[in-house]
Image (cartoon, rainbow, N blue to C red; front, side, top):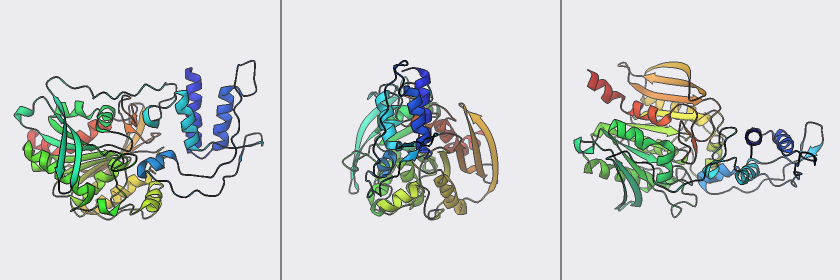
Length: 409
């Protein structure tokens, strides 16, 4: 498949996600040379209208589909002829077979082919360790990966709990975010808890279930207990414990900030949702589409927060980034400033709320044109976009701001 064809497929996918099914069909037909034997093109049949249904990405966040709606009407193409439009899920399956999508459906930059997914552990810096462990308590049990930097003998500077998204696992998440490399340079321990399909059919953290949103029971409490155990083992300073997550993992990180403010000093939320944004399956789909209340419950503790979200995210509506900030703002008052910039080939807007001493309390990065993937990530992992600002680097910088400032005084 040449670069021009891959670029056309990427444009078609973006048009489908934007709801322009007729334009997506036209692009695909043009790319395949429909009706032209001289070009060696294959005809692209128009599928019969099918019942509207949620995107595949929607189902991955909650692992359940809502009831089907009434049949969708056929769209009209640019010449007025009736053609049945492609749904995002249908087009993604097609592009996946053609090699235009990355692992687990992550969208590749235009013109790039998909790379085979590997199940290998992430690359390890010399002297560092990457262990497989299991934590068990009265709250439940989870396997987890533990990254220990090469300088751990001198004491860890801090600890980050990294919560993967749906269909991912710790190794995949570590590869895509490249967090181990940043942790090695900063002297940080990284914990990657593993949510398997035994706990959720798609391996999602159950961010939308009330029984997993509390401080004393459920998955949030289990993750807090695991964090305390590792922090105690390695004598991590109390003010240097952090959490970060992507998608469903980002939503669970928001719940940790809301329910465990005495444990976590800061959290990073990439393409996630606010704590309490949903209480069942229907409200989960609504929250993911940006419906419902503008902000979740106000935070009761002063947990600093850094948020990343792509403006073209078709899985979790970008308005959820605003809701996260609105929920944190009452507990973290300060002066606000705004800036625009670019990094990694993408422009962004960064909104910052700062304390009187210049400590960033809230940061919100809105990345222009980015989808549902870790910004500045590595293509070795799923749901990782190499373009854009490096979310891992920025999270580490945000987490350690106070320590860096104290060291410079």
